[in-house]
Length: 168
Image 1: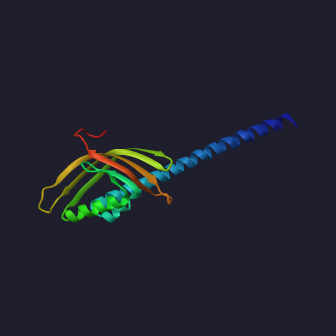
Image 2 (image 1 turned 30 degrees about the horizontal axis):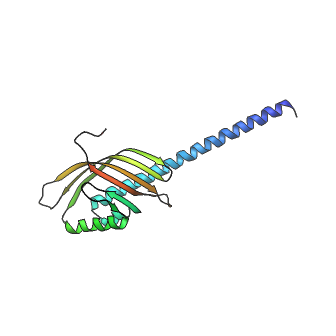
Image 3 (image 1 turned 45 degrees about the vertical axis):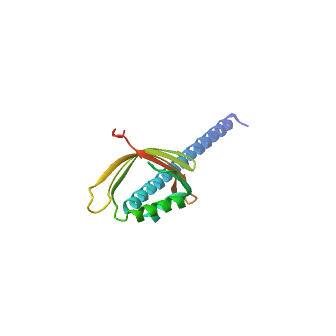
C-alpha cells in the first residue's frame, strides 16, 4: 500500500473521531437545554398553582414518593399526604388569598434524571379580605426527578425562613 493512503486513512479516522465527539457534545447540550426548559415549565406551573391556591394543581407537581419539609412542621412523605395536607389547609382557611409568590432559583445542577436546585422565594398573602397583607422571604432546597415523558416533578422539597440578608 502506498504511504499516502495511510495518511488519508489516518486523517479519515481522526475526522470521524472528532465528528463523533462533536455530535456527543451537541446531543448532551441539546438534552441539557430540553431539561432546563422542562424544569422552567415546572417552575411556571408551581407559581400558577400556588397563586391559585389549588391543591389539585399543586399535587400534579409532585412525584408519588415525594418528601416535603416545611418550616415548623413534620416531614410529609408521599404525594397523597402532601395533597391531603394542602387540601386540609385550604378547607381550614378558605378566605386566604396568595397575593404573590416569587421564586428566585440561584443554581440548578443536572445529574442524570435528577436536578438539584436552591434559592429563595418571597410570598405575600391575606388571611381574609379585611386582613392586612402579610409577607415573608424563604430559602429553599429542592430535588427534582425527570419523568418518563421528559417532564420534571418535585421529589424532595425543604424550605425555611430566610434571614434578612439580601440574596446573592
